[in-house]
Image 1 (tube, rainbow, N blue to C red):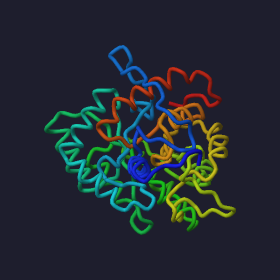
Image 2 (cartoon, rainbow, N blue to C red):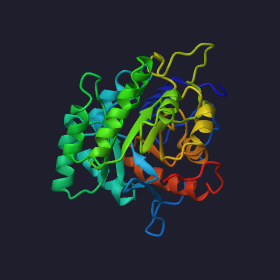
Image 3 (cartoon, one colour):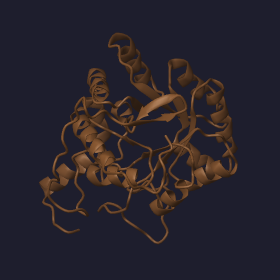
Image 4 (cartoon, helix red, strand yellow):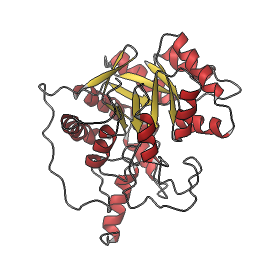
Length: 321
């Protein structure tokens, strides 16, 4: 590390980093606060792209706003803290802020809290935010979970990355094709998520028919990214400190994939400054980025995304959405 942190600084930075905060800093990166981008305005609409018939903002909200999931390394209280802060009303207030600033889509899993909040937000507050549902199918019942999201009003559905990674281990990736076909048969875009690049490689090789991919992308320049000679896969990574095993391989392979790519974990779950993570993802081929946000992070994240997109003219991968 380039500097020694006292206990108070360490605890403060650790807490913020674990929840993917937009104000986190990494000791691996230059000290000091970068210049704040200009706030968004009506003259600066959020750019977007198309996945199927859906128009989706380049910046997408992560679902930990609702689910409370938090990659918190060894700080076990963080998920509880998130869930206590993000009450139903606070989540709906945040959804309103997202829409106000041009973020028109959120990715989250289909659970009771999701259904409760969307039911109130869409009906009582008149919200329009689109929901891309994480599919959590099982091999012994790959239809029920997906159909539940379709019936509730999901705009698109993809198989969540942990499940795809597990099916790769079990040599059951053909189930991905089944899931995608079910979603598409209902007139929605169907996608495939992954942490392990090989899931995407095999999906393209066997033509599982995904309309889009949801794949991790982050660089490794952050202090908690411990490297070893033989690293476990992402799901078995007990240190909970990396989500893309080989970013350069991801970038190289996705360069040739002519389908929309939503990149997630672009901040390595808070280990990377947004100024660095957003730019790295967009410049290296992501069509959209999914980022977990608290309410107070929405406006600065949108301003930053707009600034990065304005300065991302030259990229090797063409925009696929």
